[in-house]
Amino acid sequence: MALSTTAEGPTRTSDFAELVEAHQAMVFSLAYHFLHDRTAAEEIAQDVFLELHLHVNELESSEHLISWLRRVALNRCIDEGRRRKRRREAQIEELPEPIAPAANVDQWTHERLRRLVATLPEHMRMVIVLRYQEDLDPEDIAAALHIPVNTVKSQLQRALQMLREKAGAVKRT
Image (cartoon, rainbow, N blue to C red; front, top):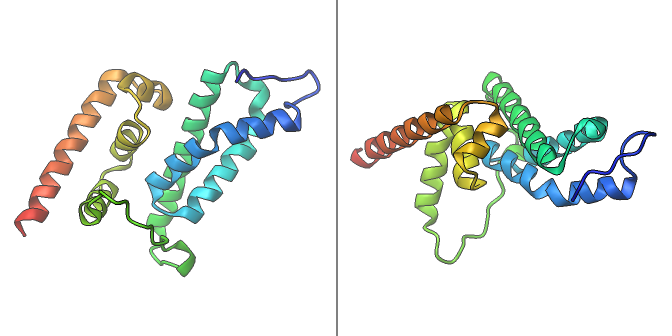
């Protein structure tokens, strides 16, 4: 969908609603897989779309929109992750809701992998989520994060190596 703006300001309400509807799943998915918290992911998605409403006239194309949404969502996730490190208490609302297991998914392995990815440094976790959850190519990740493609590739390699080492350490104990 092409961005449509008017001289008076942001897009019409129906156009903006279409933008939100078209991209809300991607924004929520990024936030949820980064934070593993449905409530926080919903709040971040809402904040991202409020920010979009303020800046929609500055966006040049639908590709720019997608890149902009990813960047803002990831920055909000990083901020939230840092806030959580400062306060270590867990409230009942923050606990993840139980999810019905998929028929052919090993839940133990899935949960173990999720926990291992959560231990990665933020920049590596971001690259892993974008690569394997959002299925982006290294070039797209580089564009979303505003870093060189070779940096993305090296961070992917390092993150995968760290995951292998951590998985091996858990396996041996």
